[in-house]
Length: 118
Image 1 (spheres, rainbow, N blue to C red):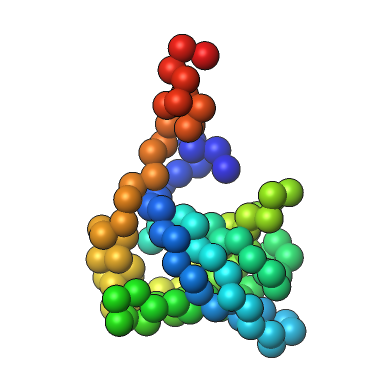
Image 2: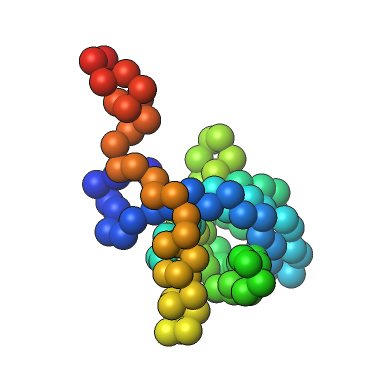
């Protein structure tokens, strides 16, 4: 994903979650790699195709996070981007708290950090 589309900070999450496909009704464990207050990047089996809806559920330090989401992109390496469709104020507050405890993902591409001179 292009960093110029970012509107909110993203954080390295490394959380195991359960993703439920609304069409099939099946649930699969997925790995949440990156998290923001608007969505996340996940890797795993059973992720619906782009444009389809799903539910994401995970626990963080005893609190449960649950959100309806839409798959907005998928890449050839098995990553998928989810946009949270609806989060109430309580969920948004807990999501902000969760993100404040995670490591911020840099907006500079890793290649530029690892080799600043090209």
